[in-house]
Image (cartoon, rainbow over all chains, first blue to last red; front, top):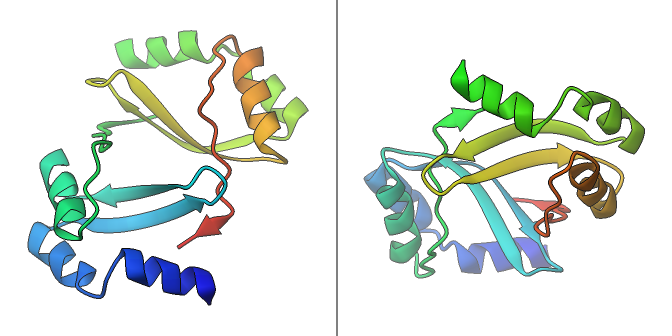
Length: 71
Length: 71
């Protein structure tokens, strides 16, 4: 419950509205509490949309990678 | 076909033997050719096993994250 509350603070309720607006869908997300890092797998129209959704949610990231090749 | 050949050079045939030996299974893997980065999602007994499998395959990495929390 504590973890869940942390996530909800990180991604406020408005996330779903921003997702719809940007056309980005988060498929999966994971946390490494030891490293203090989060990893998301998302689909959307562009890398820029992926960066914008983070900015609009209040936590910009410089690490968004476009993954056109799955092996 | 060219991409596939590149992957096979990166992960030689022995990868499957090492995977079995370390108990690590790669679920998914993606490439960002622009950034020159690869990302793998793997399950296994430990973070150390994930690091060893990369070392044994000839391409050690310092970036292995344990992801106990999926959100």
